[in-house]
Image 1 (cartoon, rainbow, N blue to C red):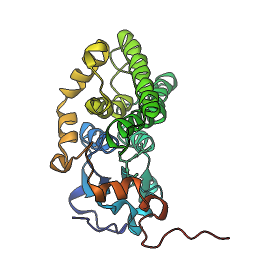
Image 2 (image 1 turned 90 degrees about the vertical axis):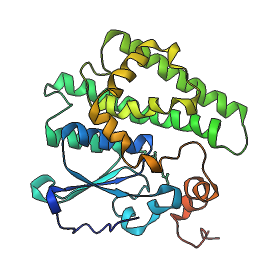
Image 3 (image 1 turned 30 degrees about the vertical axis):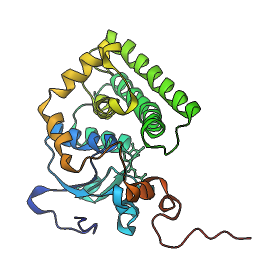
Length: 254
Ligand SMILES: N[C@@H](CCC(=O)N[C@@H](CS)C(=O)NCC(=O)O)C(=O)O
């Protein structure tokens, strides 16, 4: 069920953070962080397989029609704040909680560079790899090779990094929380972790954390990755993406 997106909701039972969410790798990052920090939150499912990311109330929170997003009703100055883009949300929650981001300037930038590595490289490249290997209706060899090679290259970067440090930025941080859910769906990218032993060690250590297990369990019965039906194809890759779900087609001026 899609609950109200009204920003003026009462903050019942201390649930001051609304999490707009669907169980996907980008979605998982945020409940993992909320669970790690022990911050109370209320889940607002956005069924992106049925186009709910195009609802006008959600577009007011994320004009880019994607989960995750949050509304913190106790934002800066005690006023509500809306946030989209997982990297920005993770930084915000780290600042709010004072956790999983070092206080020193040097330490902060270590985390920020690996967090940015995830949002600018791992997410988009693994995402395209999954698209062309698993979702594309036609198998296009060039695209499949291009994105799988990029994915393999990025696994190599992570494996070499994790040979020297326990976690991506040294200590466990929001950079790991952003990256781990994408390694979790490696079957979609045809990645064998045996080829990346340091990533495997890191992946297993994080997977043992109870907060991570609770985070990925959120709406897990709705998780559906790699096999979209026709309606999901339309919502994710069809005309809806251009019209943001409106019934009319794009009108072009002459
Ligand atoms: N850069 C964004 C990516 C978010 C994203 O791609 N979300 C996907 C799910 S994993 C989504 O909502 N897709 C729905 C759509 O594109 O309409 C972030 O890190 O938050």
